[in-house]
Image (cartoon, rainbow, N blue to C red; front, side, top):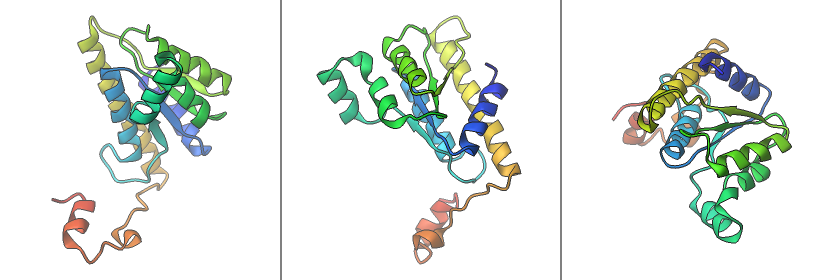
Length: 177
């Protein structure tokens, strides 16, 4: 899929009230977290947060499942617990041979989720990851532009968190120091 096609699928997912789950190993785990952060936080412009979860971040779940079952199931168990029909699982891999990522994709399909695999263009892991990061940023920009066009500007305000009396917090929240 192209970045425009992936963005279109994410936009449809979010607009119908669903979420995206993201997984990968090693550098792809870091990219998974980065992707989720761009969707929940922002890429360039403040807007409402979008529901995205990286499945690589909860060490208690990862180690418990690896210990009690097998490392092959560390993402699949989370997909079974958190995923539902209409959600999207995004898989990130430089090789395409990560068993735990592939098992997660099978679990997502059983849950009637859509599975999107980031493309693996490049000569080696380093180049593939660089291209995937650019792909992630391009997807997030399209999604962000769509939500800004639909007046999904940030509903976040310091008043909603009663921080208005603390100038340092307010400046930080507004993107200042």
